[in-house]
Structures are given as C-alpha cells and as structure tokens.
Length: 116
Image (spheres, helix red, strand yellow):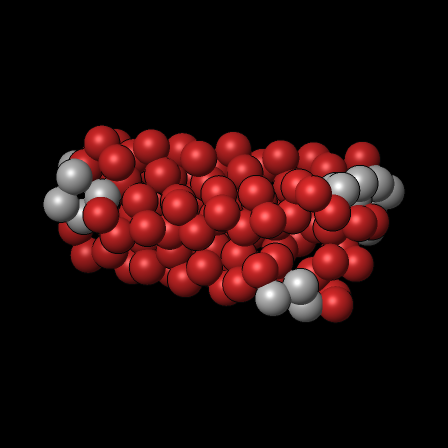
C-alpha cells in the first residue's frame, strides 16, 4: 500500500505543480480555458497557490499523515469543482476529461492516504 501511496502522491503532486505553473506563467491555453469556465483574472493566482500548496502538502504528508490527507482531500475538491465548472460551461467530454481524470487520481490518493 505504501508504494501505491507514493506513486499516486507523486503523480497528482506533479500534475498539480505543472497546472499551477501554467497559472503563474499565464500560459495562453491555461488562461483561455480558465476564462471559458468563468474564472476571473483576480482568481487565477489563488488557484495556482492552492494547487501548489496541495502538492507541497502531499510531499510533507509523507512524514505528517494528516497533512497528506488534507492535501489529497483539497485536490479532490479542487478537481471535482473544475470538472463541474467545465460541464456547466457546456464543454464536451474531451474538455473536462483531464479534470475528471485528476479527480479520480486525487480520490485514489486520498484513499491510500486514509488507508495507511
């Protein structure tokens, strides 16, 4: 179970870090996608901070389990909300599939965090 926890934590941690970097560097595609679901310019840095904080929380959570659990829960809520926003914006499956996949990986990470 520990190996699975590490694999899923690293996978979602790296994904969150890369996603936050797209927000911090204002990548054109990232910003366009965020705007298409109704995110305001002033909210974008906060979303990046939340993702990066969760990634750090997963890393520290290796030694402090409650922090890893909270970080994984935060990512479940974050990516599930992103999926809902994409659906509400009328995006087709390929538009919200990445958020849905990250929700699933976050859920698996939370499961492994809670099971240890």
